[in-house]
Image (cartoon, rainbow, N blue to C red; front, side, top):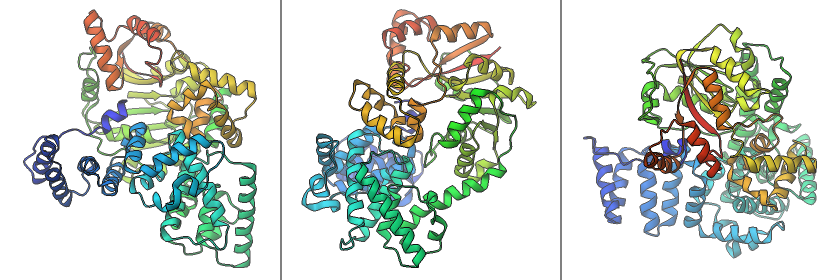
Length: 576
């Protein structure tokens, strides 16, 4: 698991003396002893007392799954995901669980994959049961409305289903049940979340054009719309971009469709209203900064739905000691008024986590893109808005702001600058003596398949447009470069653009990082790893008598295992 997954992973709580804690401990013991009926009874009793207990829902889902009660298990897994959305980061496990709970979706994935690029009909995908075989499954509905579908076979099922539902929606004689409409709306939400990344055919595009024209004509004539036709259009195009968008809010719709209008009309409208409230703290004049800003104005990154829950607040010293139990760093000793800069905050998810995680922290979250900042501000819970200040600015100019910070977080931003090391130095200038910095930098070795994919894109002359991104993805899937599907970013348009089409990308090596640390008097505290990798390297380093902060040894290990830092070098340093 990675860092986010470790925070999300269920932990067996000891008895706490309160009824809920005692029930949970008893239920866990019964589950461990394979006393499934008793475990289920105890978890259900606990959930009467604590219906928001995410781990109890998750464990009860496992128990019910083992008992063969698949629909009930799906409902409790969906509850666990809704209560603890960081679990969605475990996309492989989520998909495997879904297939185990919903055999028809697993069979549909096999069929869709075998037939691709041919689109299968509902009957070909799901047999005689049709859409009803999957349309009411709680976990599938939760997934569709929460995160991009991050598995190629599942994406192909949804792509085929979308076309079948489009065909059905424009057939005036086709009946649609309330469950069918609800599923169409969930799929429309999925398509908006992934920014319409699913492949289309020329005939399909023509059908959508015809449907949009027909809906526009009906609205102009005052003719009532059949709700499923609007849901079908929302599966292909964001409603806020339509010329008749505002008139849609003047009508009353079924609840599932009204939720789609909230997602695709009301929330984007709110973000536009916020633009005037975002202050600019520095000018943006650097040529690369201007190009990067333009990319993120067009494609805010990343789009997300729910913030992590259950984040325990602690001091920065406690956090670092938890990550690096044996590291030699000088404690900051700050238990209040912790000043944090999140440089390149994007759409705010990480800035929100920082404000949740660090006790009594005040956060300045800066980004080049106003569109990203408006998304961030809309998504920030009201209590945290008092502690997070969002502002537009350029890292290269932050020295002019006249502020300094105890902590600087610059994960995933410096490698999008013309000179990442110059950007790093600029951030060090606003970090207080003894302050700590968290960085995330792309690895030259870890992103070798991304580099190859970018060369493939340049050779084929794909442009960073939604249509070309869709076509490029399909071409890549037919080559050895399909390995880039290991990145979650492959499964939505703005994220795929960030992954493969970025206007500026640099990569780093461990020797270059070491040289910078020495030149700037920085103490290396340690790399942040997922648990499995960390355990492997802790054992290796301990057996060899090496230090976990020995960057020469880390370079040797990365050379031997080039996927060690496939995502990024994530690490902490301290300023002397």
